[in-house]
Image (cartoon, rainbow, N blue to C red; front, side):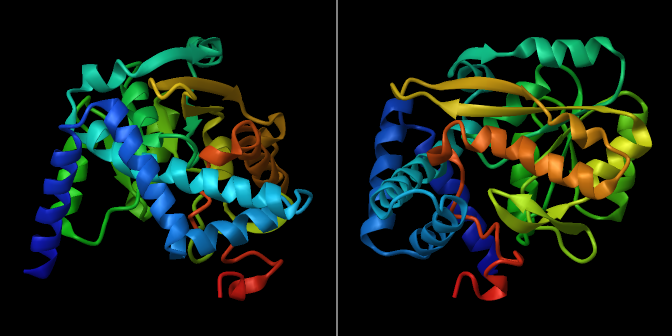
Length: 297
């Protein structure tokens, strides 16, 4: 009963957010981010740890500025969920002002192989999924929420262009192999902390970090290609620029450790471009060797 009420409240709030203009969504998100900072929230504390680990070469003032900017960008991301999930697809896609390096995607498609699109927690990854689903059929790996009502809602909005949502379990992974062998397209968030034996340690932003092996396994067994894509918030507050990037070439190595390290470098290439738009509020280093499990207190 409590879960159903919570789901109803969440969906109601998302629909309220969807009634705002995009400009007002950005303003509200900025206010949320400032409240995170002023309230010394858990998000603030996690962001502080992550920024200090990832950017030790920056001065304390530079780190502080990045922490504040990151919290503001994360506030905008939260406010944007109503837009991404409740606006008509065409209206949401209208927020895209440019697409950089799309020839990388087109070339991969022309080669007639399976394609993995890496979509790290950078900018607005919900828009990445929506945009990709308009280019060709795709499947997206996702972790279902614990609340069933929310799972049904998320599945309906994320799949409204025909995207197949594949859960993060054994059956879902088997499905990904099948899709790529049939030369399909798969979207994966590459920077989530894997559970069980699903990861190995590789450098990420200079920190030995538990990293998924799945992408490397999929490449090895399906001979697929890999690109990354991020939806970057424009500085003028008017929408997003989609940015494709090549994956680090060593991601295709048969040696899994080499491949996984290249996966992290591929994510880093995105992050270092506009680090304030990366979701530093996520406990990415919770299983890191440096700082161990006590990193976040």
